[in-house]
Image 1 (cartoon, one colour):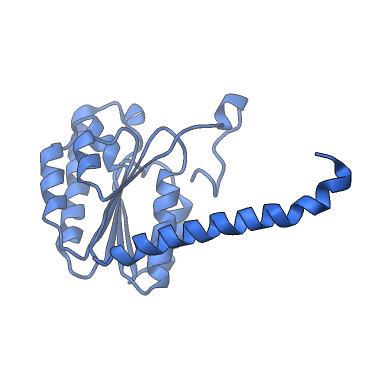
Image 2 (tube, helix red, strand yellow):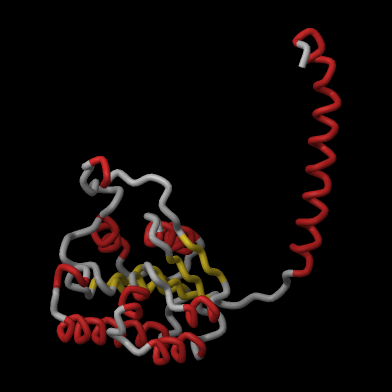
Length: 209
């Protein structure tokens, strides 16, 4: 492009941009007008990338802002104290937070105990699903539990299928079962682009935990 003529091309570029935006808005308006149904969503965050629990916690923050009651069950976490658990203690009454794991499966190295711990956490989750108090429930790292078959996937799917129509449920963790993804209304896969571990940078307080 000739620098001398750069300014003369701006109006044409702006017009093209505005036309593209008009078409996008028209398309969005049609889709928005057709989406009239309200229902509690089953949401899955999976994939090898960082951010699955973090994204779910963002939804919790948003729900609390709307005055909703929220419940959380963490299935594998518990070996270390996390920032989200510390903050949840300050929101007692609106956010019920249960950290019922004993650490990641490669740390415990005891399948039978892992299954027993997973069962206790799942029993707590079932109570919350049945409790009309909650509008949003996070089942954090449940995908890991299902991946290693610490709980029967069919049992979990049945509970989710039969949940209240207005209840939102978020399930996080790597390796989500295909059956769960199929059942979900919204599924997102996190992928790795860069991670600090290969550079020897340890997990950071307030970022990873």
